[in-house]
Amino acid sequence: MRHVLSRPPGRRNRWYVRAETRLAVVVVTMLLLAGGAAATAQQRRDEPGPSGVAIAPQGLLPTPPSARTADPPAATIDASPKSSPHPSPTRSPLLLDLRPQQVGAGETILIWTHAPGAFSVSLEFDGGVYSLLPEADAFWGVVGIPVDAAPGSGALTVTARSSTGDLLDSSTATYELVAVERPVDHLTLTPEQASVLTPEAGAREIELRAQIFAEFDRGRRWTTYFRRPTSGVMTTEFGQGRSYNGGPVGSFHTGVDFATPAGTAVAAAAPGRVDWVGEMPIRGLSVIVDHGAGVKTGYHHLQSAAVAEGERVDGGQHIGAVGESGLATGPHLHWELTVWGVNVNPVSWTLKDFTP
Figure (spheres, rainbow, N blue to C red):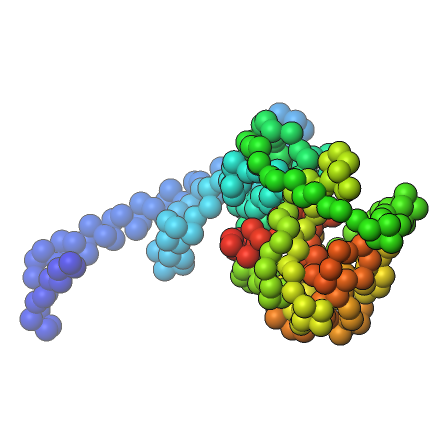
């Protein structure tokens, strides 16, 4: 608190007179010193410095109180070295989270990483490189474990870069791949049905699927759990071994089967864009929906399709009817879910929310 000394108006006490006298003496002394300093400064202005360059005089006189600007608040004083026009990228630690860290073959892993200041984050997994998607202040993505992957430890690496491509940081996390016991499905095919399953048909289907899964929509369109696409009983689980007419197990079931009468409505499992509609030699009439972020769902053995390529669909929207086209022993829906072209268990997506 500031204290103010008061006195009656018009009265000058002796303390005040003595103070004025002392102030006058101080002012005269300062003026004499200033004159000598100015002369010295004029002499120094003409003297060369050690490098042969004239030294500019420094401020020798104090700034009068009336002209002095107020000192800035301490918080606004920047005593740090000035940054260069092209500062190096800030290196920030990555916080990497895998969900789950223990996963079965044929299942999905959600990757989430907090990368402050990063412009992009890439993921190296199982020999491939994928771009993670920005979401608020994080980056995320999903990957699928092949159904025939061997149990053991696995690793994936994320790398954060600046807008100019400079490396900011990288981090590696490990996960444990566990074995999943699945039954074997023994199928008996009639000669007519077996005639569909030829090497030529298999090669053609592989070629078609390679084209379909060569490109993906980037942004995520789903916001919660996926839904079952039709009614009926699940007759074949994902990943079951397949034996035809008593032969050895030669393949794994790439989706789930719902047995239901022909003509039963089929709905999109989640919002997306219809990526492909057409006939496959083995899977029959099919609709493929792209949900973004590397995720697609397939609806196979249809009797009819109710959508066209490029059409946007909502979750639960009618897209076709159950049939038995292609290689089928009866009317049913074969439902698949792929992550970057890898078939994973679609039922898991109805039980877990794969969003960041």
